[in-house]
Image (cartoon, rainbow, N blue to C red; front, side):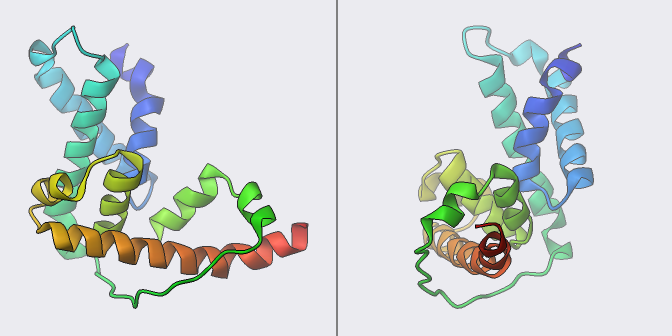
Length: 163
């Protein structure tokens, strides 16, 4: 019952860290195994969703560390691309962001998610990923540059037809 009740919530978190639904499902299932194995450690004074979220994020990071040798790392030049057409931005949906995030190298995607979505600072990210804070800042800058470039490439033309 617990799995069914929190599956959608957990999957939404897992999808932000995974390349695809299969990988996200694997992270989520591993997370629930940890939940069930450590349910006796759950403090009922805190929110169950917050506890589950933390487990899912940590499991995704563990999955990344375990499998990072299998993913190609890309290096991009940092560039300033200014978005001027605000009509395009207004039509941008969360699904569009998930598509763009899936195109990022895993280390950039995880750093972006932890910093921009989960609210971690660079020191905390560095500790979680076992990197230095400057690498976290660099990963975030590069992730944003890649997202801007991908947004411009994929969505400017698509929305230009709609507008």
